Length: 568
Image (cartoon, rainbow, N blue to C red; front, side):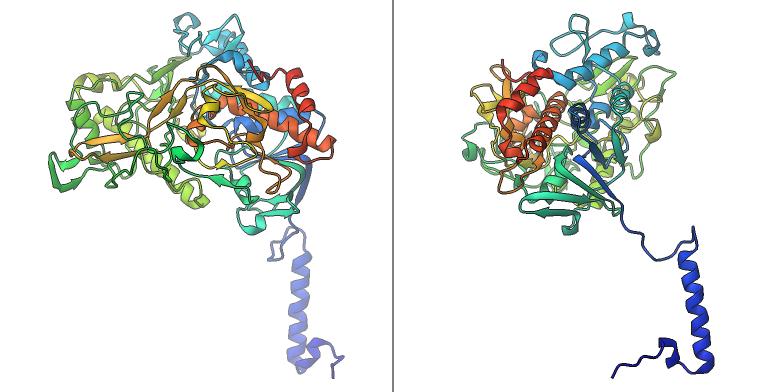
C-alpha cells in the first residue's frame, strides 16, 4: 500500500519542521539569479550547415568557401591562434611549382604580398636590404603579386582578416570529446559532435581540418599510423630506409653513441635508441620527427637570449658536440631568412631540432599525453638552443655566430616568443575512397576526379636514431624524391569510404601512403584541399546526397570558377 502523506510527514514534529525549512532554503538558492549551484544548465546546442573542426589554415579556407557559397558554417577550433603552421613559424613556404597553387590558397599569399608593399611592414630592415630569397622564385614575386616568405604575425593577421571579412563564427579553445559520447552518428551520418565543455554542434556536413584527425577517428573512419611496407602499395620509398641518405641529415663521419666513446659498456648517450631497425622496406609504427619551426631574430633591439629551460642537462646534447668535433659546420644552413631580419629555422644535419623517436604515440594519445609530448619537445629544443649559445664544447665560431640570434620580441607575444604550434608533420592518415600513392605523388599516374594539385618533393624526415653494427650512430627515415611533374590529388583522397561515413571530408589527414603524404603535407596544399572539401560539402547539401555521390562535373565546375588548379 502506497502512503499518500507528504514526505516530510514521515519525520516527527520538530524534525519535520527543520527539514521543511532546509528544503525551502535549497529551492530558493537553486533559483536565485547568479547563484552557483550543483544543478547543471542544459548544454548549448549550436547549428550550422557545415561544422569544421580544427584551427589550421585548411579550416579557415574551408570556412571562407562555405560562406562564399551561401551556407552557414561554424569553426570549432581547439586552437586559440588560427592558421596552424602557416602562422606558427613556417614562413619559408615549401611550395614546389607555384603555378599549381590557386584559389584561396593563392589569395593568402597575394595578401601577404600586399602586406609587404607597405613601408610600415618593414620595421627592422629596409625592403631593399631583404635578400628576397625564395624556393625557386623570388620571395616577393612582383610578376605574380605573391609573397611566399613571411613573418608569423603577418600570416596570422591574414587569417584573422578572412574571419572578419566573411563574418565567420569561430569558437576557440573547444576540444572534441573523443569518448564514445562525443559524436552522434546514425546510419553512417554524423548528426552532431560534442566538445569537452558540453557544447553540441549539429550540422549537415562535417570537415575534419586538424593535423591529428581526431574527428575522423571518432567517426569510425579507417586510418593508418606509421609507415606501410613497400609491398602494400607497390612502393619503393615507404617503410624502413636504413642506409638511404637523400638530404644532409645523417652522420657523414663516424660518431660514437656511447657515454664513453667506443665503450658499449658505458651505456648509450641520450637521444640514441637501443632498438635495432628491421629489414628495409618493411612497415612499422614509427612516424617522422616533429619540431618547432622557430622564428629567430638577429636585430639587437628585437631579440632576447635563449632562456635556460627547466631541467636543462647539457649531457643530452653530447652527441652534437661530437658531430662538431668531426669538423661539421652546417649549423646555420636552415636559418632561412624571412623579412625584418628574422628566420624560419628548421631542422638540419645529423643532430638538430628534430626530436627523433619521441612522437610515436602522439597521433593516438590523450590530450593530456599530447600536452606532455609537446612540452617535452619544447624543453628539448630550448635546451638545444641554450646549449649552442652557452656550452664550452661548442666551437668558438659557432658560439660567436649563435650569440647574434634570439627569440623575437614581436612574435608569439603571448608565448614568450616561442611558436604556439608544434610541427605535426604526420599523424593519422585516412584510408579513404582513393589512396594517394608514391607513383601518384611523383606525377606518374592520372588520378580520378582531381580537386587540387601538389608538386613538392616526397619529403620525410628521420624517424629514428640507432646504433649500427659497426658501433657508430646513424639516423634513418630521411627521404627526398622529386616528382617528374606536378600531380593532381583525387577527390577520393579527402573522403572516407561511403560505408564508414557519408557526410565527412578530411582535407589534412588525407588518404595517402606515408611516402606520398611526404609531398601532400604542405601548407599551401592543405589550404587548397580545405577549399575543395568545403565546396564538395555545400554541393552535397544542395544535391541532397552523400559526399561520395557528389556529381564530379558540378564540383569541377565550381572549383575551376573559383580559381583552383586541378590538372596541368
